[in-house]
Image 1 (cartoon, helix red, strand yellow):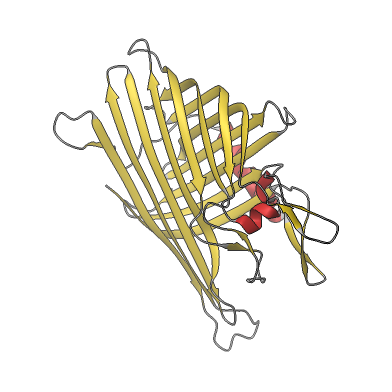
Image 2 (cartoon, rainbow, N blue to C red):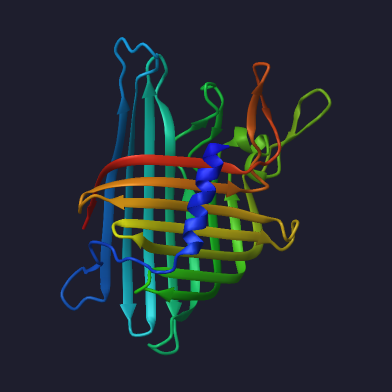
Length: 316
């Protein structure tokens, strides 16, 4: 309950303030006179706790998170093209327990837009997004049955619409009335289970396979994405990414939500602390629970991940 209250407080801060901050390092031209500008950010967060003869007890642990964001922007008069690659991978090790994954993300975004005049912040845009992960995911402590794998799932979004982009204020809003969402589950075992919304395999009364599960699912729907970044007080910056998607054909009005909020506390150019909350709700993603030693699939639930870390960050 306390974690949920903290996460809701972060969301409140997003919408209760309205001035944006600038990054320490601005995008730089790749060469003299070039229309291409690049900005890359790499970082490593680290946390550790150790006990020796500690009367209150406790378990020693060590955690690390490697992250990177790479942005390439082309701008020429009224044409703009933005390429973004985001990678994150984190692990945790506790005494007496095996190494466990804490974060795993691979995301690629590409947006191209055209505006009628140089004074407008509105663009006619097309957007492509790809999301997946690097390694197997498990419902710990069970490490025998993977509940996710590389490209299982993977999501692609392809669509066109209108985009409001204000570079000076670091705010972006994209509205697409026509977006195709494709869910990939390239692991046949997970596809046979109907994981992540694909059509599952069919079996006869004796348990013999009739046909295997489909490894993809295609939807057509409405997509809204937004990006906000602002300095709420000096050296404390809040950043939020929000995605809302609803399929026209299957249960229109049921909205998939992906909201990622992060609070950055800038110590200096290279050292930052951060607090993050990531909310996800997708009706196609079923939860896994171990009941009486047997892993069972239950209905969809609101997913929440919180992150607190301090580490080094380098922007170039």
